Image (cartoon, rainbow, N blue to C red; front, side, top):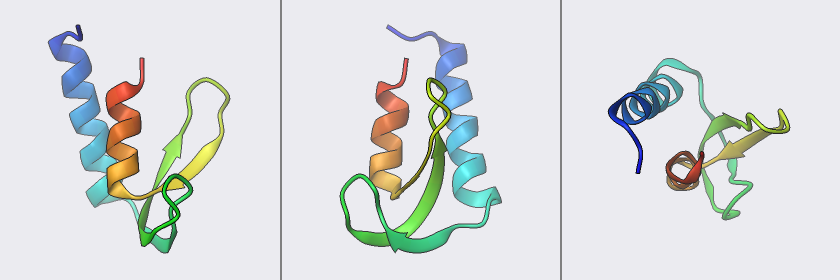
Length: 64
């Protein structure tokens, strides 16, 4: 179970990545569909992935 602060931080992160950063058009590294892409920085191994909104939301939901 996640606490309120974690949920709030996820919402802030999604908003910043979706609306305040420049997005690129290309193929998603998760599902291989062409879409507007968001940068996802993996906190464990510091890799940067370019993902569509759906894959990005799934990664943030399962990140812990």
